[in-house]
Image (cartoon, rainbow, N blue to C red; front, side):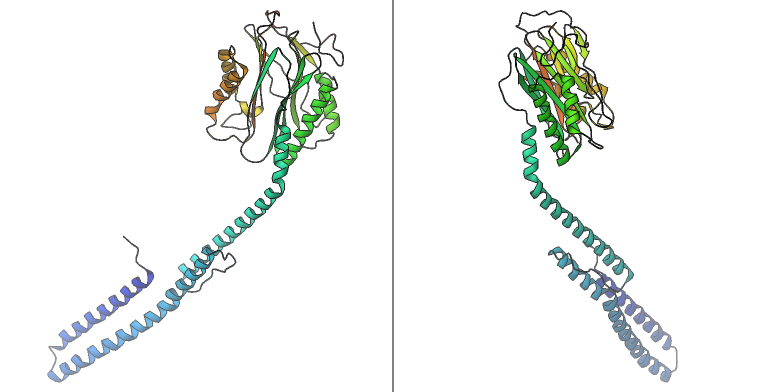
Length: 393
């Protein structure tokens, strides 16, 4: 049922009042019937006239008060809201009259001001995006892994899902090195936005330069930290490895990155941290080496890939186990197939977009190479590691 308008309600009230007056008039007339003839005539004439005059006066008074208290304020409020609907957010929405209408106009004015502030903020954000959009696109392009000839003897595949919201600082990279070796870099800059993206670009190209200058992974991290200087509250987790497919030796250094997992000969070995995250306080990093058999698979993943959907600050061990299971069950397939299975294994926990970037990478050493396939040697400090050469044992 359609609600009655305020004016109709008041008009019904006036009609009700007149009905009561008429009823009173009828009662007076009936009572006068028992009076003498002269009195009866006087009553029969005077009472209806008096009732009529009182009723007319009451109706005019109520109508006037209704116009002042309701009709005019409602019309004024409607006109103001129509102006706001047409885009005039500077219009003042205030009325005088009934307390209910004053409260309604106050609430409407607050809503108009809030909408105006939100529109102004949106306009500022749009202007900022127009200024920073090209820079964001450039940073994203710079963070993409470069396509270049990769050494034979191993396969590399990666899955990258950019998080919702502003630019983040995750990236991965593969660098061709002399001697048919390859450098692999995964890093995650804490925070989001242009500054995080710009820092990630610096880390990427510093890591490339360090590897191309034949630094060991630990030396590369030391040099990167030195070049970056004081990062303030920011920090960078980074994993750098040099892979030699000819010897099945992996030399690595881990600056607080989630430990990559090596799957080989029914064993799983985590390549844990060899030093702190890059940032404050300053640290140093050791290089460790690991010899694996032909066909070994290495799983690398960023923090967000193992993040709990319930508590974003907690690592979900179940998610890590799902990644492990995906590799165990599909490692005989291609690196591309394995990395997609890993991504699918953690996807159900986050039906929507994640808050941060997700990076998953898989390295497979060539199964066809005639190399030892026995159990891998546990990570150890290199004994004959010289700058410029990945150790061979």
